Length: 200
Image (cartoon, rainbow, N blue to C red; front, side, top):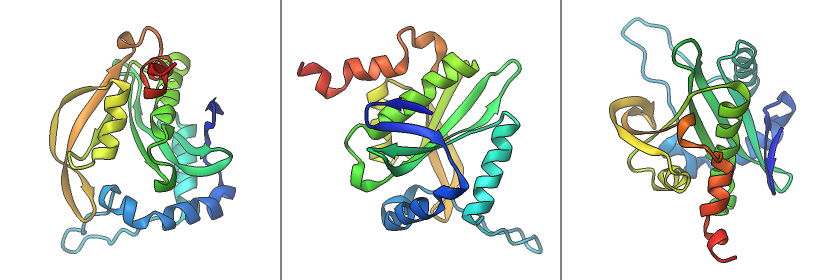
């Protein structure tokens, strides 16, 4: 478990199903423009369906056991408020991973997601030994872009038609950090630069 104030990251569990479904379904319209979708199959190819919650969790846990993923739920003030996954973890000469996340609209704007991303990044850099973390965001996703801007992620460029989102292949901007850019840690940087800090 990773925690800072009211924000907690912990591994996703099968028993989170009811709370996860409630939050996810209540936020359908808020999340739909940014969520990954499955592209149509090629002619004669197999039809792929979205996994059930139990299938999703089993897949995430298997990937975590293999060292390729860190699947978390986000809790805020004791209630499930979203999900954050460090995926595509690659070792060897790369030591890299990418972060994806979503959060309950009801707690958006309270610093929950920047805190969660900072907790995950510090864990990746300081505990498991990754060298680079990247986050890919649709250019139109202003709230998500604010998260990486608040945390000081470096913008690296555009990946055209990078992911199938909301029914089509969508361009994404790439934001990244390496461990050398964070001598103080990302959570410490966030605490130092967030708006409340300037008022103390």
